[in-house]
Image: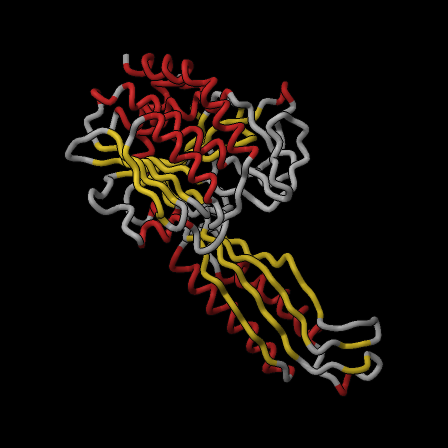
Length: 390
């Protein structure tokens, strides 16, 4: 069976995959600045002996292997986060203040591992496999959107695309899926409420932006509780509030708030933008203040094609066993793989990386995040199988 052949190759390549992942983990680079990472990926592709092009969205790489009338795509991202790593391990980040805290080093290693496997099975490939190494997932406008604009899906256009993401809550050896609407859109909201400052003991002479902002923050929650459908998850959260003032007895001239809007429905998402803007402006008008509103449109919601996901689950079960393939709930986090899912049928799934017995439990985006490296063998083998069985 092809599954056994792939698993055998993945096990054979596991030491190489660990070495690749550890190198990437030691040398993280921030979004849009991944030049040395791209050089390393290119070096690995040269050693495998596959063709590729560089310069996509800055430092992206697209490798191809196999041939056929149809084309499928596999995607991995490779940027890191501005976090100082606290893990005490031999492969700890060497770049102070930068860390692969979201597992993109694992994603890239799995795709390189899949290519290594596919190279050995190239005669059995009936499709062209387009392998997308994408930069800048963590920072708007997202490397995916730029690569699409640059024509990554052209000549030939893939009929489907697969991507994976590390998932610490899921035990190593398992993978997880959710068909249909899976992840939320993510928009950034920045607002300045500009009033008239003065002495806090004489508020009638002022236009108090603090009170106006407080009213706005409370009323904005009604956008969710009274305007959005309870059947379509939406989150509106503000995580930052600052006044341009200086003392307890001073009413400031300005208050600035920053937050995020997350939604599953694209039409409602943009309706919410209008409602948010109207509530802010009407409150300011009522009290004599003005507002500067910046809603930065971020990643769209991510949709996993239902037929493709069902077929992928079946393939994963044939490789790993039914007990190692689990169903996952929707998530209100966002991911720029969503851009791909709006272009062609897509399946974005989770790779188990946690191991309680080894103390590997830290979530992504933390300074102690790590993975059980047995996940590399699983990730590479499943990606390879999805290409071979395309």
